[in-house]
Length: 417
Ligand code: 9WN
Image 1 (cartoon, rainbow, N blue to C red):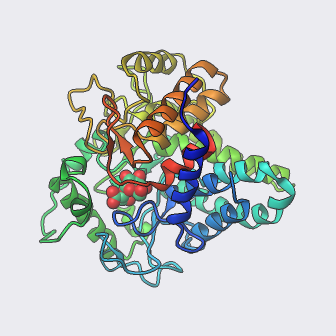
Image 2: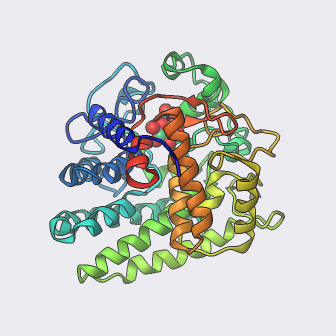
């Protein structure tokens, strides 16, 4: 048992969500991320549901109010222009395409799963809200199926920001294939908010921007962009998360008496796609550089989302037990045994509460109580001792990145505490 003052931490977590509320939508953290981000927002809805269900539904509604006519729900909604963040709406150049200026790419579709969880807390109260959201969620999943699935059925990203794991080593070989010529001068804002040693490098930012400029030139038209994609990586984050979300969508549609055959066929296809991510050398799930066909071979926190997708896997179970034995803190974003491990640099080592929550939910659902509970208790201790940071050093627990972070507060309220 821990001696943390749970009531005080609960209150602190609620205060963070309330302080980051900008009127119906929540920003991840003041300064560093001043807009509504896609998967952050879905986590916030889940967090709000622990003390204000109406506000939770509002969060989902505002997220989907940015949906594009082609079904895509953007990774950022720019409801105003804020000089604190780069690249802002003028750089993305999406004006007039969707209802709100936004990014031109998406993010991991966790929303359906959290919508289901909030709806299940009070089905009467949520019935109408869910009924209005289901067609929008379905259109978004359809967009992923149409524009982001490999021939084998795995979900791929077209920009490192699309998987929400910006500088993961999973993208290194694909990033190296890009020559960011002509990207010119620009001023980053992230490194004025946090220590540059915690952030992606300039080489990576050059490529992030080069990909954005390319999308903007093609007016973010998927048909045109799909003709020759310079960056295309099949990814366990997106594949496992969409598979889970799609099953949750089917569950809700079925409860509302809707026909689920199309959505169920997507799940079948995604299940096959997920299997294609298994690395024949390591036996574990990892990303594939679709331009070269190579498995990346990295063991990341996304590797362990397999149970979250409702899949059982013995090799992964042995590997996560090993990871738990190698660490005292929650699962790091890159295994410490990797030569590329960097405990402070964003998605190249630090541990993230959100990823551990998803892994823990999956383990729990698939009957691996002991591992699920270990992760929950470790995440809880980490936050209790080191605060509601964006992410943490996986060996020392030091808080890193932005402070008073919304999704860390949400994970505390809805899962860890
Ligand atoms: C780009 C907001 C987002 C998260 C991502 C995280 C980071 C943005 C950035 O912050 O990405 O989308 O500028 O670094 O990697 O997962 O949604 O918290």
